[in-house]
Image (cartoon, rainbow, N blue to C red; front, side, top):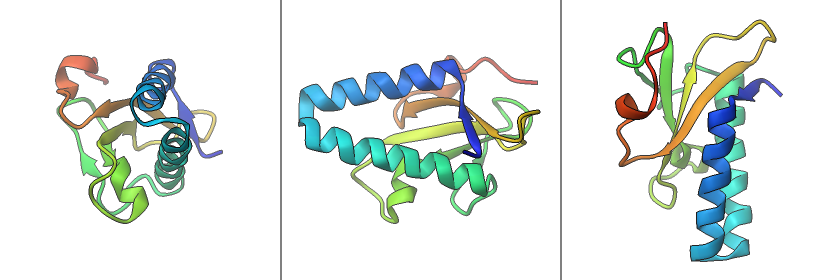
Length: 113
């Protein structure tokens, strides 16, 4: 695995999948979980992947990547991965948060150095 979910990102994904289960059912949970994992793997392998965006307002080397891009299309996925595009001491890309596209990350992510 070339990425590492920080504790808050793990909780974000749990909350997203709980909401998806209640509102869309178990089949959609499986599909959406697979899509989130695919997005994590993509940035773990290629942190500067096409479609990712610099988020210097959140800290040095912070980037965002829309989960929908992992599906190769827009729509159907409305969450964004926020991560540091620099490998940690363990050689993995740290994923900070996974948030809905309507959320303001500057209010939910403490500025990273």
